[in-house]
Length: 324
Length: 312
Image (cartoon, rainbow over the protein chains, first blue to last red):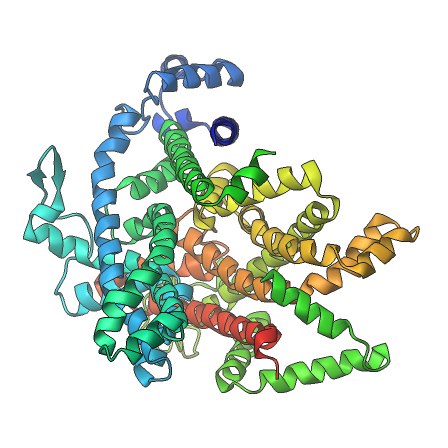
């Protein structure tokens, strides 16, 4: 196990390192951010000063090493557009994304699991077919378009909900969240629903598959022979058995919700990290782009590492195969 | 997945009749299976209709939306059904620059199709090569190739594509490249899974013992037997490529408005929904939805047919 752990850790470090080089070189190959930042009428002297200030006159490899050295000290550089530290910028946007993701996961769970259970319990009923058709739609229709339809229906036509933004935020413990105000909830509900649809579809399918399989299993037949009511069989026996794979896949998918948040945040003008990266790409704000991408790569590498380690703990064959 | 591939490949490989006839018969069998579902038939009809509309667009619609000379500011924001200065009815209205929406949508659909199909085809080719190479040679090559593939699969395709577009810049070529890099891994994974099973079979051993070049063994003997699961993945991936491209364009990092795809049109129309000008974004969205859902439904039916558990 220890050898496996060391091997995986080394791999993760190599991946982050290689990705940081690719991202850095790639991002720095596009455009000249100085041209975007200053007005065209500025003197050559101002230009030169700015270029020197941001270290853009140095060779690429030297810029990269400066970047890495700074990252090691927790400094991801300064945003060229907002003129603040990137670390601060990303973390100031982070609570908005997290609350959006949390609410959407919550919505997906409270709708997806009962719907999936029903679809698996009565697979041939009309309701079940309808649920499955909806889950296919949730899978295949692009998120941004559904988001737009939601805005059109609930914000423009009906006027029930605000169409974008985060609404009022209030202090909760050490950070500000819109979940502490009713105005904030009105703002979060639509984007969260939009973000949850893909997950909901996935959850419905997983739960349904587990349910169908379980209903034919021995333990369910025994429980039935015992005369237990179906309600009790489903909720206290089946649900417990199918929850393990469902939770595993769902946990793995958490990372991808962060990625999909990019789309939802743009549609609903939600001021999270996803919106930040899109804005930075548009404005050629290189330090923010590089920092975001490296952070995301790190996040995914960590998620995978943890998953791999848990699997290795559970299944010795993985350890033996991967260690060689 | 791997098991289903083996069984299907196995049954298909049994020569029940002379080869030329088997292929025709197989096709006929496939079609009679396919016809079983009216949903799948409808989906296929929708795809064919959309493809005819998209590729026949220059002959079908009144306006070339790319030609700025055709656009008249007087025609901006006409509601669906109004007659513009050109003297013809704008069935789906016009946009902020006086573009006929129906024309723009069909041209945009063509762009979306071209991007989806070429990205899908390229990703398929690369994925097959990677997957077969890994499965055939094994050892270090396999470990390295599949590790990279697994890594990519662990990240959402939208994120990878976003990174690549951020790095590569905008344009049709860049988008295709980004989609290929984001998607080839799905094909590589599937090919590898099916091929590892096939590789151990006798016919591959037999082919290897002849002086055939490796290339021949890989592509003429191994490949045909791992194709069935790949067909399913290919349909799903084409749909997802079209959807991804639309998403990137909507986010503003895809195609510019001068060469609009459906995503670009929706993105442009999105600015006007608060003004109640719904037709700018709703109609391209409906076309996009029909395209993606129809391709997925066809893929679903193909999966059902090729799944040996459903064979009669």
